[in-house]
Length: 291
Image 1: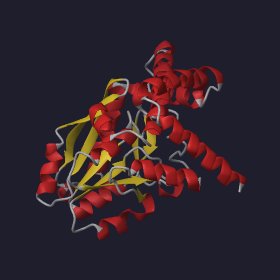
Image 2: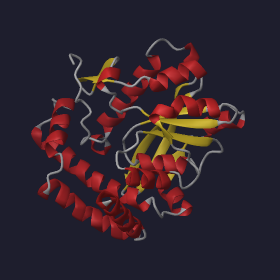
Image 3: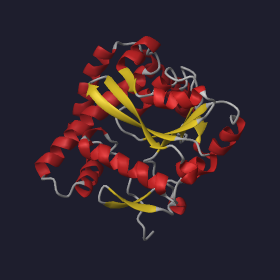
Image 4: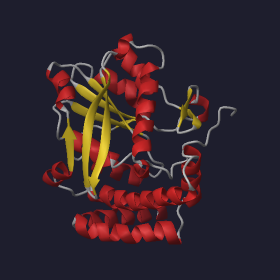
């Protein structure tokens, strides 16, 4: 009962904060950054360890610079997610624009469904929300449910405000089957950490042995749906551009692990170019091959 009351109070506060203009929320983000990085020191050890392992060639001063930039971005990301509860269609479309999306939409016009690969880079939450406003196909973001039921429902509501139909990871195949007669876009995050018992395929990613989920490749090969990568670029605070990049247009003809290797290498390239915008506070390498 107490847990539910606290959750509902938290959700009420978040909804109230979302009504503030983004200019004011970014002032809050500056304060949150100071608290996260300098006071609470939220997962600083994890972030520095991840960065040092990923970029052993970089001097400590550069690692520190990237870490500080990451925490500033993380604070902005937090308030931008809160803003999702009330952001208008017009403001979202102004702040999150797409490039070459017609490459994917042309398939939808022909009744062909597609698959999207992306990562926890930039603002992935705004990305999937805005995608629903820029394609005729039904958008199915695949997500991992959170443990708190009340907050989980709140996240689901704000993520589906503009028509997206969220699918829990374990229900992906069922949703594919139910929507087979409708042009759809299933959205996969390619940087999720598999469960230890599901860590069966390993690659060298950011200088470390890394377990990779194979769900995207299995579905792509099985359905032969074209796979596109949504590459996010940060133009300035609160403004993003996403390029729709063809990754594998005939996955049914691909070699084993070809699709997986393609999206992993592409993400690695993106991170190396602008490392501050990936989710470094995530314990991505908690599983090891010897486990």
